[in-house]
Length: 337
Ligand SMILES: NC(=O)c1ccc[n+]([C@@H]2O[C@H](COP(=O)([O-])OP(=O)(O)OC[C@H]3O[C@@H](n4cnc5c(N)ncnc54)[C@H](O)[C@@H]3O)[C@@H](O)[C@H]2O)c1
Image (tube, rainbow, N blue to C red; front, side, top):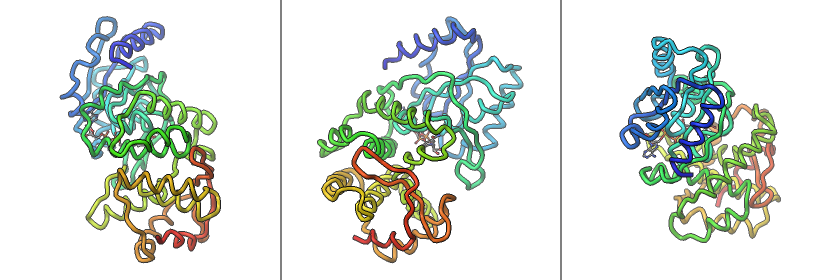
């Protein structure tokens, strides 16, 4: 969707809902690249802007306090509208501020990274990190309007950030659309990200979230690849050689797909298609018993596990996943290649 369509849609929304004051929340990188993205909106509403430093460190209680203070100092009441313009850090932080300022104000996300377009900006999970506890404090709180993404914003996104989002895009293909998986697999190099890829992920996530808004059952399929992915990410960070989030997710997708075959659900030929595809774009480590032994404590950390079992989403076909599949901890050692 082009910028002018977004402006038109937002203007119409503000007019219909009597919104007069809009505060844009963004980070320094996005502000530097797109300082005037929403300027035309000021023809009809009073626009204000808060810019926070870029990076995960800003997803903190200190930044939330700064934003609450700013809104309060400017005497914004509950009718103010917050427009989160940035990646997942901004949409999580801004959503949390919106959920809590004066017990909740209206907001929308306008995502600028691939990860935020297809995942973070959708689904109502908002939050900040508590010291080292990722997303330690937060709330389910939904945007008033879901805006279509502007794929041209990705032209300026650094390659590592594109790769991070691409890991999530592959996840959506694996759990939701064999057609998307097959279309992505045609490429030997990084595929061009199209509006229809993004729209598919948004629709798919919205439908899942509608059925299970509080993440109690079916929504767990969205965690496919993330149980092992998070274990890899956490361990690599602690050992001082961090693996980027999207790469860890892709590695998790690879091994959770293998697991799906080893437990007798995903047909062998479909596993082979995944095994041929992922290493073209991501480095996949070879799991040894020693590596798995070291990952096990991180896998155990997941709150859904108990008494020597691990609980994770699993594939029964490319394009379809099941939530909450229980495996014995020892089954993880079947992942030795
Ligand atoms: N709420 C959810 O459902 C959900 C889901 C997945 C991830 N998340 C959260 O999302 C966050 C990660 O999001 P992210 O990967 O978007 O990171 P991010 O928001 O930190 O953005 C990554 C970097 O890209 C820059 N950037 C943003 N848009 C740009 C553009 N168009 N051009 C150039 N640079 C740009 C940012 O300034 C930043 O430096 C994490 O905090 C994670 O917990 C939330």
